[in-house]
Image (cartoon, rainbow, N blue to C red; front, side, top):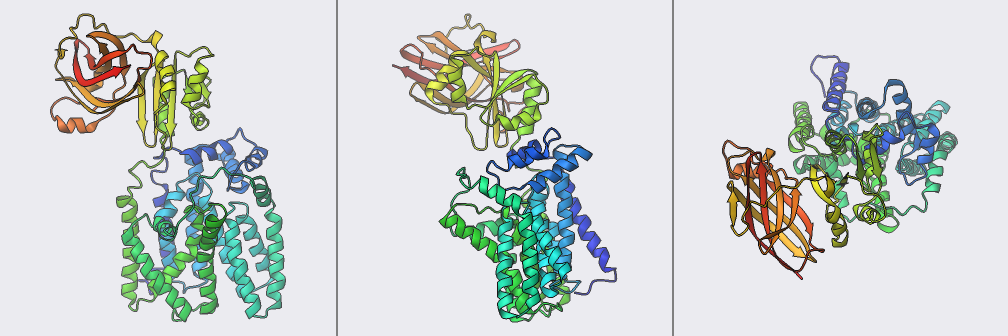
Length: 602
């Protein structure tokens, strides 16, 4: 592929800069999520290298090298989510450069730019280059291992045997999926030793793998300590995994993935028939075996282990198969007869990849990581000193650096039981994340409702938090001047009950209500339970953000805070028929409206 009158290295530099820019922009936009918080806590300056090693005992696929390196860098340049993610960005750019070097082992120099460009703009690689985890380092190590594997096969000398052995030692200290990289290369070596009688290849292979085994001791230690670990979160895969995981690699764009399938088929055809005219020291058959094995064997092996032994297959771990995939894809583009068509197709594929990144996936503008940071900031703003309760509180602790906060690592049910035997705090925050919902069982809800009102809440991406304040510190409105025989009194209120259930004396209600001609942000909402037109209970409600209400009632007032979602226990209520009312107050404006909900407590 002849490229217009610029030095070859100008194109390489352009691709590196492009890859760096796509990885560095909005690096701090997303909150650290659960796994990244683990990295931040393990590698913090307060930790030691022995702490990092000890962490590897507790069910972890990740090995000490990445954590140790991040810990070392953090002690020099500072520690925090931006710095730790920056490490991944730099590894990502290094991976692009190594991709170019690896591609030159199979393709002519100019055509080696194709997989290099694909590496620079690939959604999956950019995503994990902005992740405070070891996956980008694993990608780099998988390229380096394959690079020295190829060099060693071409020229089996002591030097290349040493470099190959060291590259194996590197990857074997990053992630247990390195075993599948090594497994694929062992199978290729066995094939070559049987079909090409090269005594030096056997001798120096023993040297390489001897070095690798020495460096693999930390991995063996981890595997030994986690052999009985049954804390499984990966589901057993079906055959669709062979479609879904590769689709994930390309931003879940079926259009882009269709191109990938087409050009992979062209690439396989070129490699296995020898029509690629690769100008490489490797024969087309050996090139095909190396690339095919590096891409397919880890995938098939992890699938079979997941199907018949223990589920381990996960797309981000299979980042190791992307280097051979990109090179085979480049062979497919290589098959286009016209150089102009080759250039146009590669550019179109690359531009579409960037469009998928920015448009279809809205990578730089759409929140997709659990907002632990934002919840922590909100709690700190609203409650300078408080108790924080959750079975995920270990992760939240990272964001709180002073002693004003007490963390209880308990779920709400356990904490409510504990309330019976301990001094009750005046307030506490409870949060849930990762698909947890606030739906306590009736007996626990009753214990909580007897003592607390929910007076504030935060609803973020994949996380929510509720503030519970003790009833003794809450001042409730005086409704004695209102006539509850009326359906509505005071300032006009518009309201609507969208959904409610009443089972086991527990009311679950979703509704909206607002004072007319008032901004809802300044309104305080209460649910009032009345029996025989006498108030039995007044419950403060923290409003829910509902932008759709503004759309339904356009005008000069902001009604977006008019949402209501509440769970109320009536387990201790006296028998009888109860009416549900909404009472709203905004400065001097106040009023109530009866809803159509009637509850019969037996």
